[in-house]
Structure formats: structure tokens, C-alpha cells
Image (tube, rainbow, N blue to C red; front, side, top):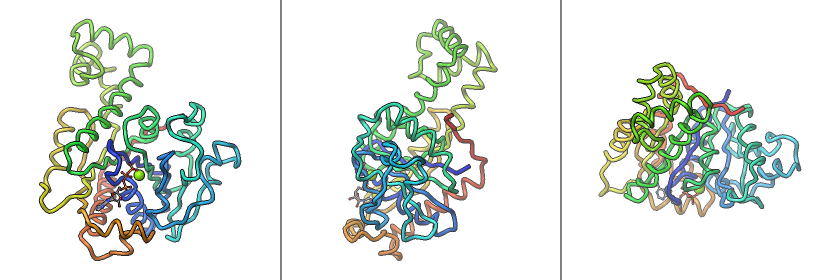
Length: 308
Ligand SMILES: Nc1ncnc2c1ncn2[C@@H]1O[C@H](COP(=O)(O)OP(=O)(O)OP(=O)(O)O)[C@@H](O)[C@H]1O
Ligand SMILES: [Mg+2]
């Protein structure tokens, strides 16, 4: 069973693809068979970050039944152990993806034979983006230090969290219990998860615990990208602390990634940043995030959401 990490961010341009590509390269160089999946349908550009020309195959070949399996859309990359499913050359946009096509992607990704699968997601909190995010309980959220980006990240985390509560509540018996909780206290709604959980646990400790445990399967990380010298380096850890306090989930800080103007140059030259500029603070930061990702994985058993 692969470790599947969804990489998301509320705001466009925060660096999701940059981080997905470079973390993928580090995982592959560390000996893990790693697959990157570009799910930013309509704006896919992950291939450029890892230095690939426009791939010939794409996820739409699978959706349009040009090939029979998702595995057949996998492209090798110049990095040994690193593979890509591209979302480029795609006539599909995430906004007009048919429900069946979405389910086909969601069901088939976890079956792919890799150690790590990183999903590069589009910006925003659209219904389809949240569905893709929830292919896995493991998520990396990418934000910049700008307040607008942080606000959007919080919105995305809440959307994923609330969707999970709705999923659990939509099973018949839970719905009744949630209604009872609301009768007892009108504030016990999905948008007030603390109160809802508290009252549900009082009404039915067993079911309340099931809901809480479901929420605690989320294993989220935060990467703070494009940190400049004048920015507060503690802000990422603080965001994690605040989110952990308000929501019943794991939220660890992966690390700061420094802003470096040469990222632009690497993207233009189509050479992965950490290969073109190996001795920079930003590469060091990416390595630290990679190390933290692996250490936390080893420290805790990973529970995954599997959609069947
Ligand atoms: N640490 C960094 N320092 C400097 N520039 C960066 C850094 N990270 C990313 N960038 C630049 O920011 C821009 C956006 O990066 P990227 O494409 O990875 O963001 P994204 O979150 O995937 O955006 P989108 O939502 O549009 O897919 C790119 O031009 C990239 O070169
Ligand atoms: Mg992107």
C-alpha cells in the first residue's frame, strides 16, 4: 500500500508544484519508488518543475479509455525511481470533470504500485479538489507567510475536515445522533465540530469516539514556502498549534522553505531547483522538509482513507 500524500494550498502560486516536484525527487533519490500525479487538471505544469518536456501521455488517456489502466499513463523521468502521471495535454478541466471520471481517478490511484504517491492539487476549495484531497488522510498544506495565503489554507483545512464529518454523519445512525445533538444544543453543527463532538460523545460515547477517531486519521503537515528574511520564522509552527487546538486532527510543521529568486531561473531552464542550485538555503530547507516527512512517518503508524 503506497503512502499517498495530497499536496494542497488554498491560494494559487504558493508553491505546491514546486514542493511536490522537489520532494518527489528527494524521495526517489532516497531509494523510494515515487510517483507524482498532476491533478491540477486544466493548469497542469508539474512536468516542467521536474525538467520534463511536455509528456506524451496524460491522465485523460485513461479517462477517455485510450488506455485500459491508469498505470499505462505513467511516464518515467530522468530521475531513477521517479515517475509522473501528467495532467497536461488534457482536454479536461477539473470544473467539468464528470462524477464517474472523478471516481475512476479516486479509486485507481491507491492501487498503483509505488512506495510514495504525491498528488499535486489545484488551488482553492472546489468540490472536486476536496474530493481529490481526500484520496488520502495524509496531506501537506503549502502556504506563504502572507495573511491571504494563510487564510486560504485554513479555509481548505476546514473544508476537508467538514467533508469528513459529513461523510461519517451521512451513515444512517450517525445522522440521527447528530440531530439529537442539535436538539440539545443548536450550536452543535458541522461548522462547530468541537461542540458537535462533545455532545455526540455524551449522547453515545461509542459513536462519538468513532467520529473522533475518524477525524484523527488525518495526518496533516504544513510547509511554509517563500519565507523571506523579514518574515517571522515561527509563524508556520504557530499556525499548526492553532489548528491542532481547534480541530481534532494531527497537524505537524514540516518546515520553512526560503524564498530564492533563482527558483524562477530553474523553472525557466526546466532543471529541478535542487539539482541546479544544490548548495542554497532553499535546497537545504527542502531537504529538511523531506527528512521531517520521513521521520514523522516512521514515528507514527499511518492510517489511510481508502475509497472503495
Ligand atoms: N521558495 C520559492 N522561492 C521563490 N520562488 C518560488 C518558490 N516556490 C515557488 N516559487 C515560484 O512561485 C511560483 C508558483 O509556484 P508553483 O507553480 O509551484 O505554485 P502552485 O501553488 O503550484 O501554483 P498553482 O496553484 O498555480 O498551481 C512559480 O513561479 C515558482 O517559480
Ligand atoms: Mg501548481
